[in-house]
Length: 180
View 1 (cartoon, helix red, strand yellow):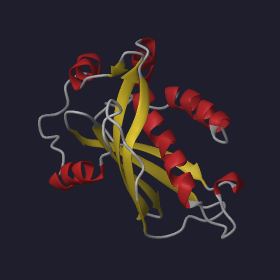
View 2 (cartoon, one colour):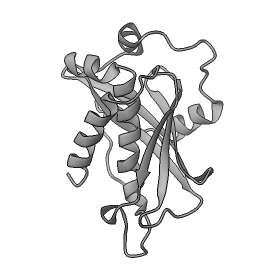
View 3 (cartoon, helix red, strand yellow):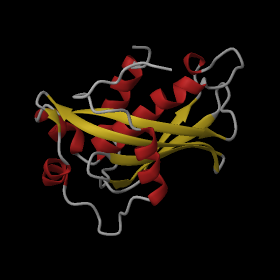
View 4 (cartoon, helix red, strand yellow):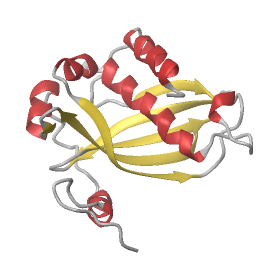
């Protein structure tokens, strides 16, 4: 909820920016706001993923996918994510959120996102995402029929296949009992 207004503003502003292909890199200029920081005066570790949502929305809107996706009743969800921090982004610091689709497997589309300031990567995240509808997950075939086929050279790095396999929880159709 804390980013709802900011998200709506960015969804509108992205429509005014130069169009992109879904396979391009989105670069979204940002500034660290007081609502982004914690007591250490830098972006809170949990806030990075919320801010990165804005980068993915920017790419989808500018590629013309957002409206088509929403018209079909599809919603984006994150299935798996990991982040590595290098430097802290501090209050009022300018930075960009760089967003790129880097591949897909049979279940997810993978993004790499970076927080970049002064030409340096401050944080990098990998996310496995899905589109879901009232009827369940949307297949890659349905997605690509709507968005266009990905470039042939788009091959998911092997370490992301392993990462997904090693961190996956059971399907929602199977129990996932809590036992330490």
